[in-house]
Each structure stands twice: as C-alpha cells, then as structure tokens.
Length: 102
Image 1 (cartoon, rainbow, N blue to C red):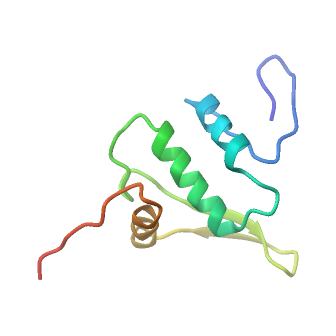
Image 2 (image 1 turned 90 degrees about the horizontal axis):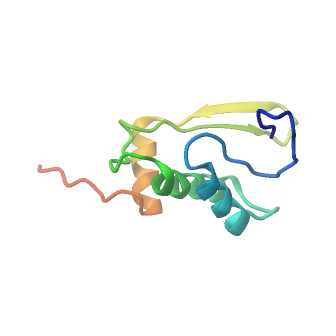
C-alpha cells in the first residue's frame, strides 16, 4: 500500500478510499493469517456495511468479485451473481431477508 507522499507499507490486508481508517481498524482486529475465502468475504461485507455512506446494502448497490489462487497455482476471477450476493448479505446479517408473496 502506498500513499501520495510515496511512502509505502506492507499489509496482509488493506483498505483504501473513504472511511479507510475504520475499515483498516476492522481488518487489524478481525483478519488472521489462516482466514478462509468464505470468512474473508464475510469480513469484507461486514466492513462495507460499516463504512459505506448509504444505508441500503443490497445487490443493487454492491458488486462482489474475488481474485484467488487455485490449488493448481492458476489465478481465478469470480464475480458473484446478484442472487448469490443477496443471499450472502442476509447470511452475514447485513440485510434482512426479503419476503415475497406467492
């Protein structure tokens, strides 16, 4: 991570942009070296819910993509569908389940 002065520092997890201090504080508290992808996604969604300026955290306002290494060593990019993201937001407790009438 680098800043405009040209100084840089190494982090295992970092946050940039608006409210980055709050996000960085959450990372320092909750990030661990052996975090799983699922735990990392949950942590990111909780961080976004605490640091975003809007109060509506839905798949219409957010997008989620992951870049990770497969066991084979290949880099994988996965973009979460809006439906999957909605389910994740409910699972993490960021939003309430929607009730649809039959």
